[in-house]
Length: 104
Image (tube, rainbow, N blue to C red):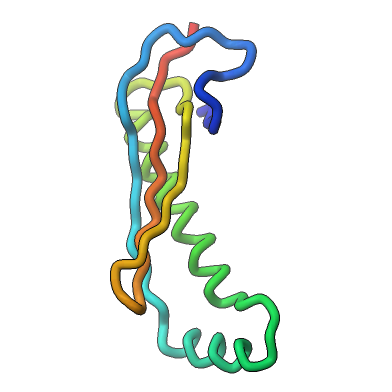
């Protein structure tokens, strides 16, 4: 499956737009990771525990979006975007969305 952030697949013609596809996940911080991240915050540097958490959340959201596109028989997703929002202090939602298309 081709996934582009552009509105079309370079070098390919869109035959049909199939509609919006999306995938999301909500992830919460783990108390153990939170303690380690808090200590790391005191000395500075990358908070690897949160980076890993968000990387996994992005991958899961994209996988869910791809599953929806496959169900529609899409060849590609164009205009793909990612958004993150805070649900509460300890949880965030990651949303992946785009337009499923068939290519010529």
